[in-house]
Image 1 (cartoon, rainbow, N blue to C red):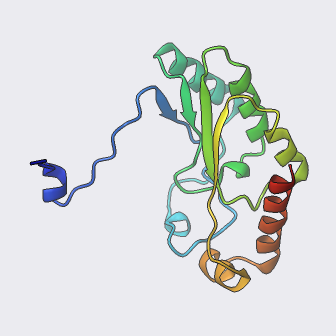
Image 2: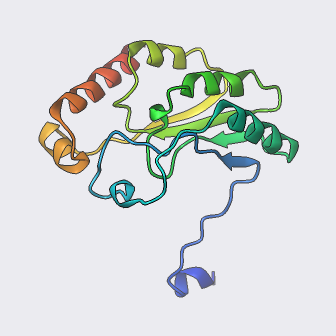
Amino acid sequence: MVCNTNAQLGREFIPAQRYTLCLETSSVCNLKCRFCAYTKKQSPKVRMSDALFHTCVEQAVDMGYSRFQMTPLTGDVFMDPKLLERLEYLDSHPQVESYEFFTNFTIPDAEKIERLFGLKKLRQLVVSIYGHDQESFVAIAQSEPKVYHRLLANLDSLYDR
């Protein structure tokens, strides 16, 4: 018989992934999704400086981390205007094994999407899609139809590539 104490107590336990550090370079988002705390957050909406990013990566690899999860808690990774430069830095770092992120994929343009294909250590890119058509996307993301169409264009660019 398997005994799961946390489940019996109504608690969730998400184990830490060994050697993986979550690094949030931006806490800014372009959507106001109904299920997200972003619109209610009181912490600053900021982007990480280059110096702090490099310091965090160096400290992390010195402590044995080799994988990085770049998904913000509330925000979108592509709201960091230096995201691709940061990913290229991770890509060229000899002690970094891999990195990954989630995105709503409504922000990058075709040129940025193309640059993703040059990254060798990008292990996973997960696209979060809200709704099944324009009407449901606009209602859930509290956004505009043009953002939905940009998402579709970005998905087409990804698919075509």
